[in-house]
Image (cartoon, rainbow, N blue to C red):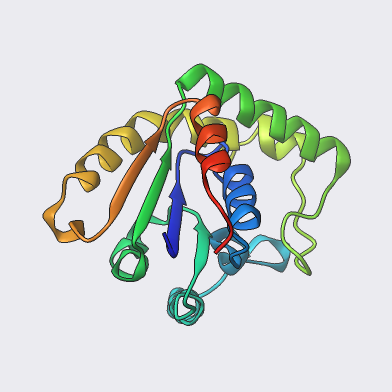
Length: 178
């Protein structure tokens, strides 16, 4: 495992797991949201996003946190391992709500130098709510990822499906720094 992409529905815990994995292996950690989001919630133009992502993936070792399904062909051409954080809907929803509450209260900047913070209104009373997004994408992601895991185009990748926090902890405990 040298080039790892951690995927999962919003709220699944992929960022927490990705950071722990990168730390455990002493690999660079990259977050796709940090590449995508600019100040004032502006998005990076697609070609710049792809250029930034492609440049990041040239490193020998990395842990990449994020889905952005339209980038699979680029990131998975480099990846040797994809870890899917696939907890049950109730746990994922609980984690998404808890995270939104904490971020809304603390006004924690999400990505360095962007000033982007989550608000209670945006998280819970908006059509752009992360809670609604989690509910809308949970089932679709499960179907999509199950299909991708069996796609012969990605036969060079080792796919790992993590279905519980206990399994995630076990994976982390078995790995040694490279």
